[in-house]
Amino acid sequence: MLIASAPGMTVVGEAGTGREAVALARSARADLVVMDIRMPDLDGIEATRLIAAADDLDQVKILVLTTYDTDEHVVEALRAGASAFLVKDTRPAELLDAIRTVAAGDSLLSPGPTARLIARVLRTPEPGAGAERAEPAPGLLDVLSARECEVLALVARGHNNAEIAHALALSPLTAKTHVSRIMGKLSVRDRAQLVIVAYESGLVTPGAAPQPPD
Image (cartoon, rainbow, N blue to C red; front, side, top):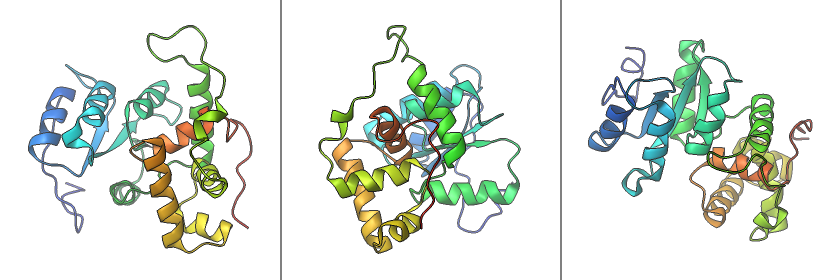
């Protein structure tokens, strides 16, 4: 009811299970899926993974709802391809703003929760991997220029395009172009994946205090 009543938004489907969510994302041509992690039949993490891996659904953004921003499953959801996460007790107006933000391709990962979550990503092995995660691999970013690395670091700290532009004395359009090029070079689908790459490469260190734009 909340989403349907918001200007510019239309509910094109409602799913009771993860499998239904995947099918509806495809049949209804959804722009964005608000995904609950805990669902019967197929949970939200697996549903997110299936949507993110489907070539015909590569434009679908996924906003995950969770009980707490430290929920261990949020890390799995981000790995699976979720674009952002939000706690369930978020106020209605904030939920609508979040949907608009994610649908526009902008970041919804605040620096504090992001640092905690990615620190856990670095400590937690991928399913089927060994007991320890590999050390950060700086070579992962060799395809990026020095300026692109600066932009990526600010994305990882939770800054939006306008804040990045201000911090680096760029125009907002130039900042947006840098972000798009970085995603292309690193073959990631959205800013949430950029954040994970930035931390796992060692460009940004978990626990380091984020630096606001000057």
